[in-house]
Image (cartoon, rainbow, N blue to C red):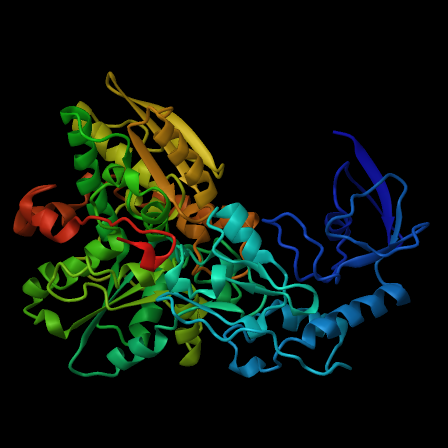
Length: 579
């Protein structure tokens, strides 16, 4: 690859041809302010904060989109550049309510950071509110147009990364704003609740529905037995809001922190991830042997389930009937666990800690009450758990190690890799291989389904039986696979879909900022947790074997179907259009 050499603020930098000025400046350790730029998205040059002065050019150029040319001399801090950036930011602030202490992003806001970097404490311009009021119609997301700075990141994410296009620009000129089609509420359109727009928003214009208050109320209620489950991906990210580097694996400290918050029992969603493999793996084998509907599509990601219900309802028969690990846990907590402990299910309050905003929607689905009650009562995102800990002075990095409670806290390495794209597939194949072949799997690390590419294909030989598999992360990539299935071009047996880039480690409820580099470090932590596990195959989990012996009978039994399986429903783009 050809290189070019440029000079930035007197520093000579050599970079590959095609590198932007912003990227070159970062290599030179020069921090150029920006608000609309995000490393996951194409540059749109909307905020005008990253402008630089290029020798010989009469115009200031946006460094996020301007490519380096050999011999270029760039000034990132001239008087003209400083004045231009200050003016651009003051104009943005003139349409942004300065109510920082009331905002969910206070202390973790890119607008605050840039204003501090540029030394702006007040603006010369009168405040003019943007049109549109708060939309809290969704069970998951809240949209506050007044705080929007028109960076367009949410629009790009929804359209390019997720292919949903639930939001876009409305109006013209000075009065342009971000809105839903026909100004409908998020609950009335094809928003899949993935929360990726939240993770890209630099301010507080988008945020998740708060479940913190209801969880505190349950913890304060002496009549409630409050149990909590933690998703695999949370343990690789919860350290970040406390200043720990991405990829810090803090499972044991997190358990201690949850006990300090007052939970009666601290359990692991990994337990029911192992259970999901038993149920889903058995279902897959049955479909292959008995001529069932193929390919079978995984059903663990609620954002993905929302997507297929909206856009590909004709493919719902392909979806596994298994509930997600979160919902399997909720059903067992108020049946199996309640029975073992002699607790009335109505007195159990079930909380989950999830990297996913769509889990808030999933727990409220009418199908999710197999226990006779709402199986999961509240869902906290990774961000919300960090907020709760900070509210009572818990500093996660300083905590001692803790251990999950029995019986719903025992799990395997196969369960923890659910947090990564390809993890459900790999975990399932570890078990399916040994059930079908009746031989031990010599190498449990099935690298063919690993990776961060949008779509990956693999063929696995089960002692003569060839299983063709595909893995996709991000809904735009899922759409590619669905189109192949609809057109008859796909000959897969098993397809794993995760709604979020990188899988759950890049979920809409994870700490911000999130980028490809951050996601990769979280993935490394998850695989490290798998390697450290004493048991790495779901069907070898002794607590799962005991569950079947004492309570469920066998995988896919009648009782297992009553508690652990469900069905999904056709939806349309607009709710009222459903027949």
